[in-house]
Length: 192
Image (cartoon, rainbow, N blue to C red; front, side, top):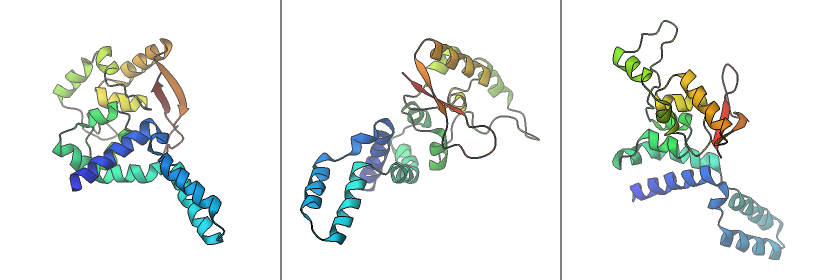
């Protein structure tokens, strides 16, 4: 039963990423609307109004938190990789919060950090543009997300993104409105 609950949480989060309106239950909305129209009690109308608002706009934050809580254990049982989730549009930061390790994450050299192992440096230098194109997700993503998933250098990823955008297969969605932390907000991209 717990696995079914986790599966439905994962399914609902993926659905809300692709199409937030897909989780609207029109029958419930119609029922609440009728009950609201028929009610004369102020407090009942208030409760019904809130239920109607909740039914019309599924709470993406609540679904995301459920995903963060359940997705890793569910995916480990199946098994499903982080790359599969990225390809379905799940943001890398959400996957990290859920406990997934993304390829390439934490392997760059930072201030005072250690160098990457030679095998990883060699693997990274051989990533082709087709290997960068393959994991482009359907949802929004950043250059950094695509870099982490593909293992390619930022320059190669930027080149592929520019080519895909010029060919009309990608479009810029502007800067990430949810960006927190130092530096400029990254640009979000989406498949056309």
